[in-house]
Length: 154
Image (cartoon, rainbow, N blue to C red; front, side, top):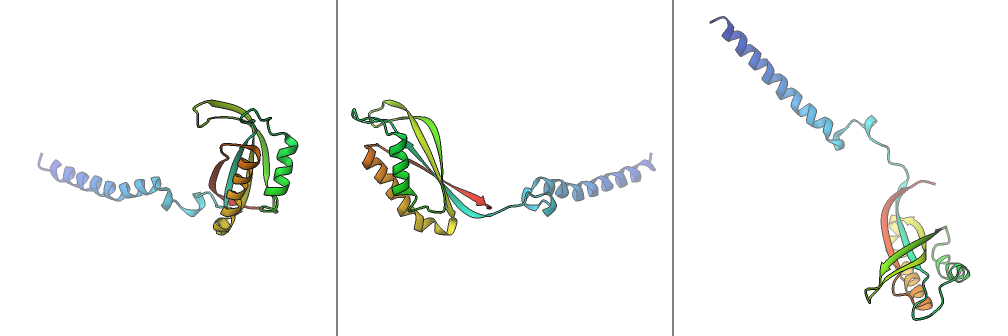
């Protein structure tokens, strides 16, 4: 019995050493910030901002709906001069609750523009002017805006 105690003590010390060395390694494998470079997803492109504007087309106050031609003309006159490098327009269907609490369902357009992050302050007034012009011209209560960070590569 005396001879088994040193073996148990040696086994316990060995197990403790393995755990002391192995635990930080196991936790490090879970930490994505310290994962080896070969395992990380490469970041492509340059930092950009993507701004999405949502334009409803429903007529308010008995006015007719905004037509495709009216919207296309608006984009040509108001948006293209601010974003001559390009933009994307998608047809959509949307709904929202107006100021009176009524749920409005309408045909919409989603307009997306991308610009370098360093130009965000300079582009902001132009984007806000586009929103204000659309609301005024087509008697809309709002034009929703969503900004998101993106990495862009052409």
